[in-house]
Length: 399
Image (cartoon, rainbow, N blue to C red; front, side, top):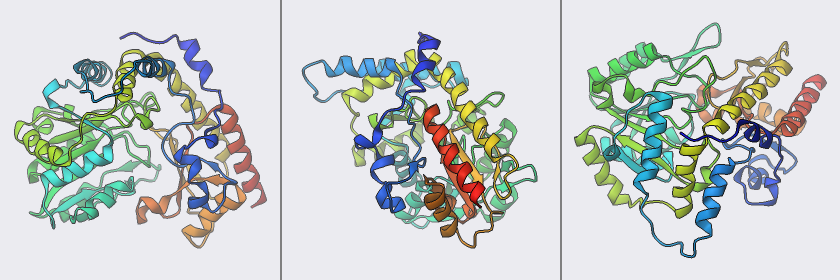
């Protein structure tokens, strides 16, 4: 797999791009979400770090061609992803398993419609990425909440006793987030195997959102759910893609892998009803280039992100009221602010907006289990991280 020069990759991470001058969601929605533009936005999960040069070059080459008509996603792009998943994660995919999708949320909706009926139960494990819950409800399925539990060391785990007590004949699907957004947990193999055993026993299919699978810090290792065994692979729909890894969410391209023939046939029925088509000419180019040429860039990025996380930990070390357990994966800091003394989630949010002047994601938006938490995206260049930490330290000192 060809790679970029590592020194070149490192140098671009410090560049600050004025995204406020464009139409970046993170910046454009500041007034709507926070009531002011005077916040440093560190909420939505994309990076303020430049997309790798290999991707930009591939998109530029395609843009230079004179026609932007309909295209099929090329087999070579799927093959690049298949090689990547095998080499980095030990997951052997087959071409016929793979579907193009413009987003993981769209893929979640397709799985909900394909593998359950209105009134059926779909398991979600809060605190969780909000669309998990919203899409279940929008499709008139019942939420079966199976909250994660936190141990004395701050680590998060599945609560399988709770899950087994709640399962009924109407429980059809479980939405798994791995690595987990927002808590940053990278699930261990034994934990995934225990969850899989419950699902196999009760005939529950699993949608595994593994979009953050490449953003894992040593010594942790992402274990694809479908890699656990042929039996587990046979109940799993896996969502993967380069969007988070290479900061190409704007290319609107990911994939879905469905190994079981009957499941794949049913998934395809709904997929065709929705008419996903095959994506954009620029998405195809960027997708393939990322997987074929972006590995060294990613390795340098992981070092950079870990440094940002460590710097945040240093600032919060000893701060009364905020507990920070560095994520094992993702670039999302899950800040436990329950001991800060605020009487409501609104007051906590207002502290970060008005005093720290930081636009974060309120934990309560991830389910009531997120009450008292805030999520901070630390995938930013050093100068931006410097400013964020300065604002945070100042606000905390005043308290």
